[in-house]
Image 1 (spheres, helix red, strand yellow):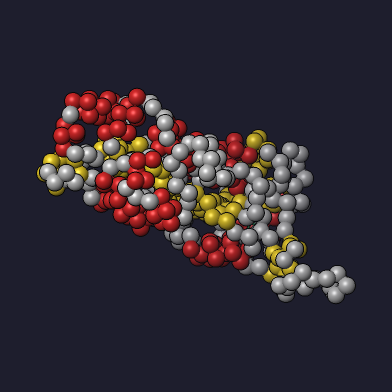
Image 2 (cartoon, rainbow, N blue to C red; image 1 turned 90 degrees about the vertical axis):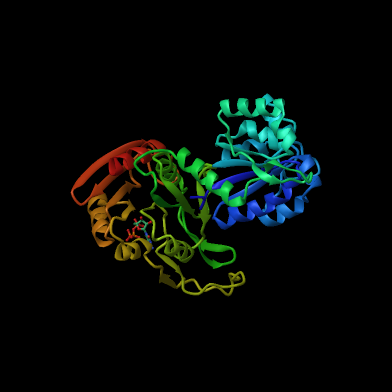
Length: 397
Ligand code: CTP
């Protein structure tokens, strides 16, 4: 349930902060991508470097991080937008009180206010503190505000006393996190489906400074990925070198050449739905030079070899129930060419684009697509985002 999910782990300044290291590893083992934010007090219990090394990302502590160049002060906004779940473990009585009051005096508490995802709070403290009237009242308020609380466990505490206040075992927190994410998943026709979308061009390098490519912007593929996410799908976007912005909430993996895309696709060919919107180069240079070829020495003839047809390969391997959706970019005989690709590549659907249409094509924000199956044909026109949603609804609703 946590595989591919994005989790912010907030660590506050209690002795159980050291257990957050194990929790982080368990989240990672479960396949989640984790970023850590710490309160300044937490850094007295565990070194920032521990979390930086384990996540391979900067650990955010202060909102204004003058000593960390390159870290934008708007990081809390991006983090809050990025995550599927924010887990604060351990959460001290102090941070709990701040959250109840909306105090935003460090990166952890500020990110609580920007988070668009569910927040799971694991209050962890001495037994007396936990039972104190102020903490009890804050816990009840925070529940009413819609935060999730994972109650502490009873046992041996740092004070040497036995009481309720211990951070629950990582497994308990993982299970709770999984349930929360599951309950917050968008419910739609693609809920529970793994959707792989490809977008953008490939680059086939001839030497380190020259390559064969095409003007694909990746916008249509990104729109299909976002559309699939909005219909509930668990989306992975494989994208070539693109400048178009990918929405933060989509999981991505980059490729450069057709062969790299092919390798990535082989490891995701189990997906329930595959949408091949990438403009894959059919050819690459027969010989790739390690050094720049000097023009005096270069031949005027470039020898090419055929790249694998990834979609055709997927069509041959297609598993029962899997839906394959291709794209066809044509300059002539749009429908006939697209229909022949539909059949040849064993596709369920193909989105036919004409580069000749007005307000359509590679760089444009709008498009005109004829969606074809073996026995249907329908035209969709408008912004790429609108068309993507309409096409996916037509196919899956
Ligand atoms: N495609 C692919 N692998 C390739 C070439 C294309 O997976 N080597 C996919 C594209 O992502 C698209 C579909 O096949 O979904 C059709 O691509 P297109 O370039 O329109 O057609 P081709 O099959 O390459 O045929 P042609 O170039 O002759 O039109």
